[in-house]
Amino acid sequence: MLVVSTREFRDKQKSYLDKADEGIEILIQRGKNKSYKVLLYLTMIR
Image 1 (cartoon, one colour):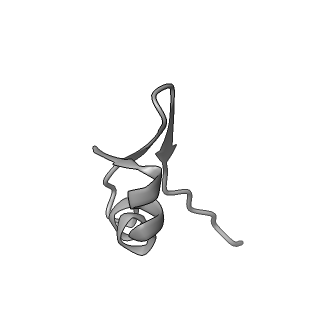
Image 2 (tube, one colour):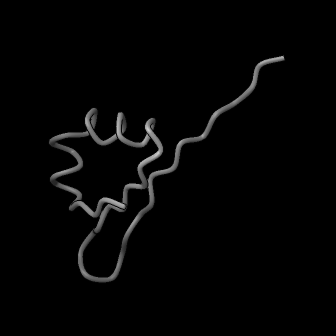
């Protein structure tokens, strides 16, 4: 799992989304009390 700040995520967004595509969990730390987990969500078209 990678833990990054919101600023670092904004600066390198493509890189971190590519890592999420590879299955790596990304945790975005916002301040001291908030964090967000980036998940890959796939949809199937019938």
